[in-house]
Image 1 (cartoon, helix red, strand yellow):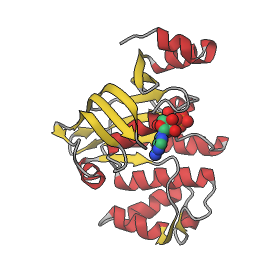
Image 2 (cartoon, rainbow, N blue to C red):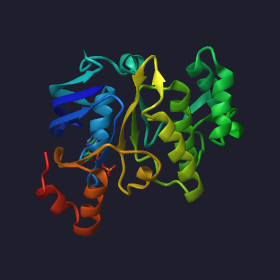
Image 3 (cartoon, helix red, strand yellow):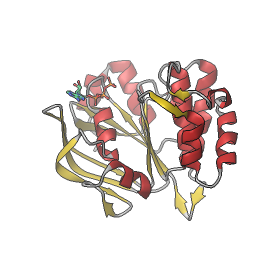
Amino acid sequence: MLNVENLHVEVGGKEVIHGVNLQIPEGETHILMGPNGSGKTTLLRSIMGFSNYTITEGRVIFRGHDVTELPLYERARYGMGMMFQRPPTISGLKLGKLLEVMSGKSPAKAFEYAETMNMSAFLERDLNANFSGGEIKRSEVLQLLVQQPDFVMLDEPESGVDLENIALIGKAIARLVDKDRHIVNRKKSGLIITHTGFIMDYLEADAGHMLCNGEIRCRGNPREILKVIQEKGYQECMECVKL
Ligand SMILES: Nc1ncnc2c1ncn2[C@@H]1O[C@H](COP(=O)(O)OP(=O)(O)OP(=O)(O)O)[C@@H](O)[C@H]1O
């Protein structure tokens, strides 16, 4: 599904990602961990094609297409989707209208998803305007449910979410990356950033990667990596490179 080859990324005039290689096969969900400021969000945004993230070396291959030079919307058309950690507020754009546009010919289905995500009362509100942290997360997951991307990237989906809503969001994300869900014979895949690992209680994670100072320093079972981080800190994990 996704093949990131020797990716180097510059943001704000400095190199933040230093030669990352990452492969996510069709039907797999991978977990991305690492200390604050290690470059996790930068990596996801570069894969998605945000314009202020400059790829200075390396390639992003998605479904066999080299998308390194493509704008974000073209990557979305190929089937990539991303949940923002801090999405912008857009005055004048109602959440309901956005869902209608995203859903194409099936707005009824979009409003069903809104109900599932406890967001029906937000449809007439401007996008993200005074939404709480947890409401923003639910709105982001709702938009992805409506878009149904083949490959989804999620930036700390559980952070700031209360215990009841973690279950709601966790189950919705499990639907987004469900291996058995086929869209025109394509299996879904995902890449999820997490610090706590709570999201792994709701879905089957196939592999974990730990990013440190813009480099992947450890790969393996995501629960094992998390355990080492919890018990011994990031340093130990950096040294136990299992590549
Ligand atoms: N636009 C920018 N201008 C300057 N520096 C930036 C910019 N965006 C990111 N950085 C820097 O790049 C580094 C990596 O940031 P990034 O947000 O990718 O880290 P992260 O691993 O996602 O962190 P966290 O776990 O805290 O969310 C940080 O030092 C950050 O300050």
